[in-house]
Image 1 (cartoon, rainbow, N blue to C red):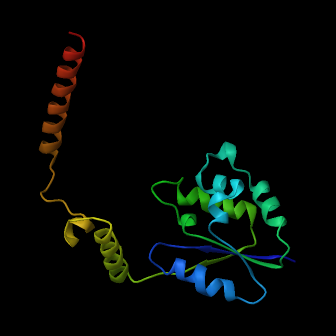
Image 2 (image 1 turned 90 degrees about the vertical axis):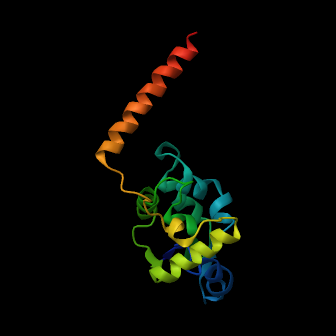
Length: 166
């Protein structure tokens, strides 16, 4: 009987290290990871496509092509990102395809995770401070502010409408 493991690679939890250095060394286990999990049509649809394009049976067929008794499927996108469909939908699809799979997930302390994420953002050009990165409201946004914003937005909308019709 085939044994399927699914590694949900949460951000900043050593996923790349595990995929590159640890998982390939597991005895009698075949690793399925990037770029296969991103470039293969079936896995791509699993993670990015609307339900009308994703079929759990196709995922089973794709894995069925691999002659191995233990398979570890690992991808960071299984936890979802702002560029993918939501993580709940990905999880449902994986469960439909592999209902008996064992899920592997690593967690990281929140403070360490936050600092690591912030440091990466800075390396990529972010210039704000840590408080701005975490996000906090610079002032209390009240209901009166909301009403003022609505009034201003309505005024801008009407002004734009008039300008477009001139």
